[in-house]
Length: 136
Image (cartoon, rainbow, N blue to C red; front, side, top):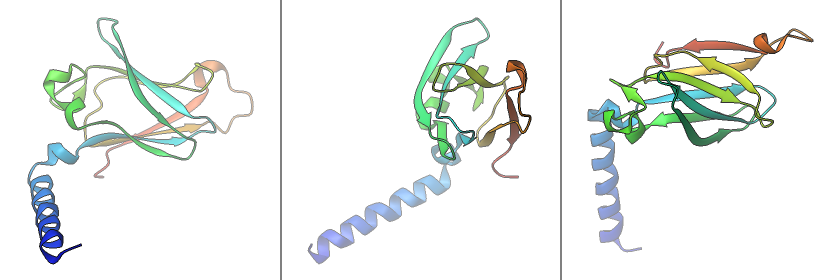
């Protein structure tokens, strides 16, 4: 790789870093941490009942930027001022609801979903949901 090409790539990287540093909306996200033993997938259920499947999945022990970038823009219809306008719902591999978080969930945030320590919890208390802001 030539010196000019390396210098050009370095300049592009510096410009991208500067832009990201100046606009927090570029790096803001609603992040999910999966502390369960199942992969999770998600939907947003809007106040009017419309369902928006989110095409992302997080493995057990994994972390996922669930909503980010353009999904946080007003035109996407999922958020207003960077906050969700419906319930965020997490489902296990078998399709059973594991956790639900009522709106608003605002970026930047971290939603931690973990299994209960109770041996045989009833279905309604199957998950212990922790929620904290990513910047706290």
